[in-house]
Length: 200
Image (cartoon, one colour):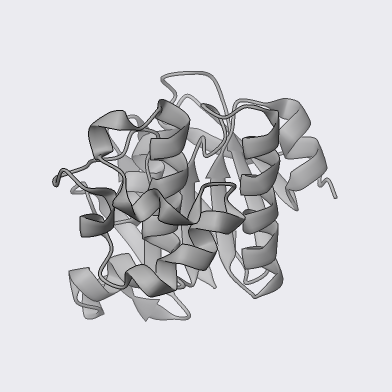
């Protein structure tokens, strides 16, 4: 269970939300409203005020590297620091099944980063975050750069993670995706969250 209470970001607040294991919560709202900042704050990448707990344990009692494995953020634009894709994965063998389930070739680990399309970068960033089997997934527009088949493969991976008990908070600008995909939807405006009608 991810529990966020009284969280302030540069975009405002306070923001409070819960995401239960096996739940996909869509985070919606206009561009610039601060959705990505909420994900970064939960991931402990920005200095913020408020309380963030994982299964009742405060974030500040968990070492930051361990927290970011348990609570994994996939930003809209991922960072790459080496020339070869495989150099970004500590355990390439564990990553291969996840990479293929995202609709990429099994040899993608051998590719050069500079040959990747935007969509390939996004899916490989998802694989990089999820290979650690995090308890909480923070996904910022995970299918925005993907075509139909790639988006469906990615949604299937997210559904499978939900089925295994991951708690998933996903930013999306696509109302249709939220309606067909999310357990609940939250709407962010003027620094405040409001609950939208539940969808299945």
